[in-house]
Image (cartoon, rainbow, N blue to C red):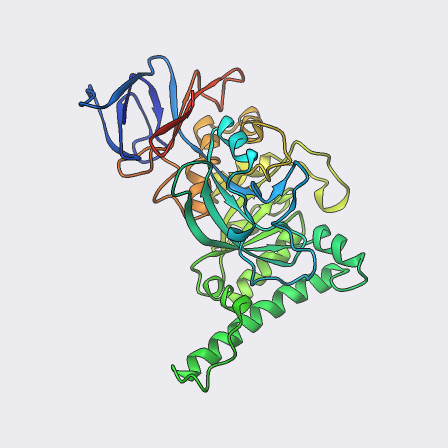
Length: 380
C-alpha cells in the first residue's frame, strides 16, 4: 500500500492533469487529493518532479501466444479459415517472458487475440501483464481478418479464400448464419426439441450481433470499407485493427458502427498493396472527428517501446500530447471495454500506475522509473 506524492498526474480521466497525491490500497486507487499522509502500514513514494500516468493498455497483441523462443504459435490455428469456436484464453502462456518485456515498456494490460490467418479466428481476452487475477475481461472481442493474411495462408493450400471476393463472402456468410441460429433459438422458445444443434462457433457470434462485443478485424486500406459495409449490413460494432491507409476514409470512419481505430504497428517494413501507406495523420484527423483512436504493438515481434514510438510520431505531426497519451491509456481501454477498471487514474480503478522522469509523449529521453500493477511495484 502506497501514497504517491508531489507528481504531475495525467489522470486521463475527467480531472485532467493535476498535481495531487494518490493513495493505493488493496490493489485499487482509493483516494486522490492534496496533502495525503501515509497511514500505518503504507509507504510514501516521493515523486516530486516526476510524471505519473496510467499503465498502458495495448489494444491489440498476441503476447504469450506467439512465442519468440520457438515454442510455437498457439494463437494462430492455420487449419481452417473459420474457427470462431476458438478462445484465446486457452492459447496464452501466462508465464511467457514476453509479459516481463511488456512491463518494462509500461504495458500493464493487453487485449490478446488470435492471429490473422483465419477470417474468423476466435474470441480475444484482456489480460494483465502480472499479478494473481490477471484476466480483466474474457470474451472481450471476436477476432476477424481481411486481406493478405488469410489469402496468403489458404491460397498455398489451394482452398478458399484465395481472393478478397471469397473473404468478404465468408465474413458475410458467417454473420448470416449467426443471425439464423439466433432466430431458430428464439423461435424454439425454450423447447429443447425445437432448438437448433448447439454450435459453439455460432454462439461466439451472438454477442457480436447483440452489440455486446466488437468484431475486431485485421484490415488495411480499402479492406476497411468492406468491413464497414458488413457492419452496416448486420448492424454490429467493429474495430479496424492496423488501419494503415485510414486517411483515405476519414469521413466514412466516423460511422456509428465504428467503435474504434487501432493503428499500427509501424516500425516494420512497408509491404506493397494493402500495407503500403504509412499515415500517422489518420490518427490525428480521426481524433479531431471524435473517433476513438488507439495504437498497438501487435506484440511480441515488434520493437520495444513501440507504443511510445507511435504516439511520439503523432505528436511530431501536431497532435496534442495528452490526446496522444490517450491512445495508449483511456482510448484503448474504452475500445476494448475495460475502462471501468483501467486506462485512467481515478478512485475505484485498479492501481496500475507508471512513474516517469518526464512526460513520455513529449520527452524522447523520458525514463520509466516505476511500474505499479495491481498496487504492487513490479519494476523499480
